[in-house]
Image 1 (spheres, helix red, strand yellow):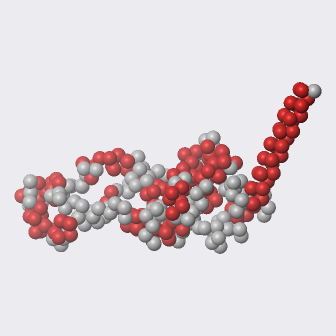
Image 2 (cartoon, one colour):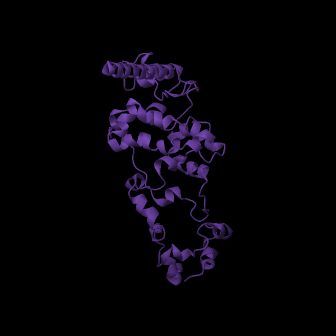
Length: 287
């Protein structure tokens, strides 16, 4: 085993010894990754060239996930994301750092940073989703909107786990019945039956990255924009059509009074009809 200080004596212009020691890889020697460096004499004479680092030697699980993802298919190597490999520290839980890495290539997703998710993340909210919460960390799949059931299923399946967490929603002052009401709707029933490509998913209406509160004028579900959003699928949608309750809750009299009282009236009519029918039948039997 070659002492790392011997490597750093020559390569101190590339690697800071102090920073490397404090990094996540600081407990490893240089030759743990750069195997050719074990032949120090030949390397110094130029006969043993430093070979490419094989991250999979230590990170087998991450590599297996990566090989099944879109980054592998497009030759995006580990070093493209982990480009501070000699100084990298453990950033587990640092969502801002992860988003910044993704934005180095995906600069077209700046809309995420202006969204309710991105703004919440910038304020230090640990509940706010970062890129990996939706797309995964290493096993990142290509999303093909409207072409496959799997791709369209992604539009809702990534949102449901968080928005179905009532405790998380309550502490973030977000409606906690959105998943239940969606799944009970026409759109949600189609999703549950396995036909997401024929029904609207969460991202179809709210978008995938630029998610805004409906009170925000730039929101796709704002009252001034909702008709155009509906017309993406329902080309003949009218203003009245767009008043459809996508998340209507018949038990919520405060936010959906018409739906609530209609439900109560129809339920009363149904119970009353059956009550009169059975009372009439019982009295007729005695007669």
